[in-house]
Image (cartoon, rainbow, N blue to C red):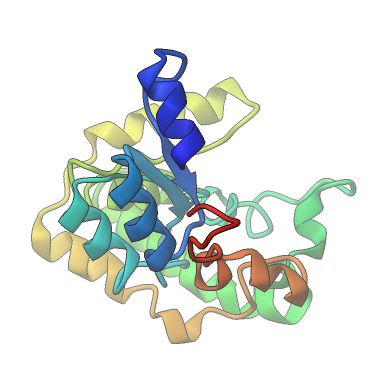
Length: 206
């Protein structure tokens, strides 16, 4: 962070962001130089950041950039109504494995039904839910197809009241999600929960 701060002071970098950082790392890094944004996974079926990371970012005035806001394509219908290509990396994702996928399909069906209520697709509802978590939230859904891009843009028009947001949240109980959010167990160690950087001492910097 000390070196990045120098780059800002030299005019070579304008903003500094972090990705999948722990709360301790965020707080210590922000003390060296203001952090503009934290990129971290956040979607209807990945909400472990809500108790610790989100409140901290808001306390410090840091923007939140959720990646995989559609649950790695799940709420777009991948694996449920849209068959996965043979070479898709999602074929090895725990939440897309046969037994887990069968359980998770029930969650998709709930969001699909709520989407009909709000006259939008499941993907648009899932993305609108993330978008409307706050003005400091800027999700980054990924796609390679124009039709999906158009659909994602359409999520902006989906307006959800507070009670609607709660209803959508309740339709996806975290305890009902089958499978971990990472492809293999060892990658769980790459998440923010295990992302503390070494504390500053005579030989290292925060």
